[in-house]
Structure formats: structure tokens, C-alpha cells
Length: 110
Length: 120
Image (cartoon, rainbow over all chains, first blue to last red; front, side, top):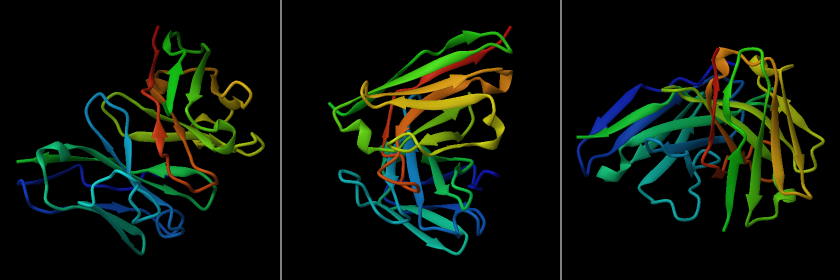
């Protein structure tokens, strides 16, 4: 199973909105609404920020939102803040009952 | 509190074996699917295995199939990963992650990770 494709890096100024894409195939992203997103600060464990394409766990800021169209999922961070600078990874369940992660995106707040 | 704590990582020679453990607390461990996920230095996350709440359903990523075994002991609130025939490319931080109530669910709770280094 090949990793889902994400841009290596995305940057934005404080207050701006940025969007990170996550492209897969009909066997993963396009096959189910089981796409999730994780935020990871350096040296820390990942943290779930979006599940089932567009749902936020309790306690996660509503500045994070998710969507999906066909084989591509997207994470949007609105009102970018310094604390949002981190690595972001998508994940999808697959039609062969496994999971696959994205290649990861480093977000820089300018 | 609700947490997962991994242990068992370390330095091992190529071809060697290692058993990782993950101790769960603060939630009903036996209700949840559990997964192992790893991250090589400077690389992205890689899912490697999950096990159902009862332990009867198990899946592995292709690159580790035949070399690793996931298991759990619900009475001890513990998850395990037995790794054999280790290779340099298995060097990574290994995380255990709670995986919801069914297949497809997200990884909603992570441990701090345990480092495995495969080197001669």
C-alpha cells in the first residue's frame, strides 16, 4: 500500500488560512469516509485533530476543519496561530482492511 | 488518567528480536481496537498492525508480515508487539495507539513511543 500524497510543506502568516491536501486512491481515501488527521509537534506523539473526514474530537479547536472530494481529502487551518506550527499527517482505512498514512506536511507560521 | 505507556525498546543487532509492551490505563482497554504505528527518524508515520478488542481479528502491513506478531492481554490491560528478524529499516519510534471500537476508527490516543534501533 503506497503512502498517501501530501505536500512536503505549507506556510502562512498569522491569521491566514491554509489547506493541506491528502491524495490517495479509490482503495483508501475514495473508498471510505475513514480519513483522519494528526498534528505532531517536534519530539511529541501525534494528536488526533480530525476523524471520519470532518469530525473534530472534543477539545480540538474549531479552526481545524476537514473535507473530502473523490480520492483527495483536505485539512484547513483557519486563523493560523504560532502554536499551529507542526507536522500534519493524514490517514485512511483501506479496502484491504489496513491503514495507510500520508507522507506528512510541515506547516510553518511565517 | 487516560494513557498508554510503551516499553521494551532498545538497541538490537540485525536479525535479532525484541518484544514491545504497551500498558493502558484510565479506560476500558478490552472495549477498544489497538494498533502499533512506527516513525523512522525524520520520516512519516507508518501503520504496521491492529488487533480487535477481543484479539480475534488481526491485520499487518505487508512489509512486516511474517516478522511481527501483535497480541493483547485484556486482563493485564496490555498490548504487545513481538518483532523478529529485525532489519536496519525497522529502526523507528514505535507508538501504540487506541483505535476506537471498530475497524476504520481513528487513532484517538497515543503513547509517548519507544525507540527501537537495529544496528550492529
